[in-house]
Length: 49
Image 1: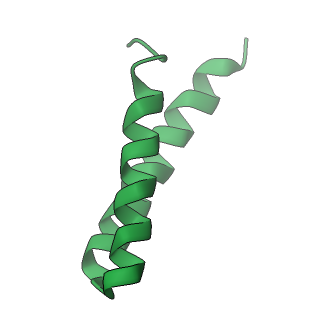
Image 2: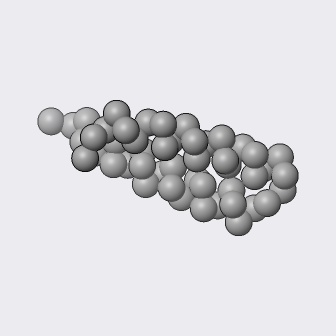
């Protein structure tokens, strides 16, 4: 899996989460944060030698 390709996804979903908070669409916020957590976990797990 290409790690560099994951960073735009992370940014995209953080923007989606922020927009969801502003629009008060909480299901969208929850889903976006779950995806961000999973992607962040994948990135940090692969960073360790």
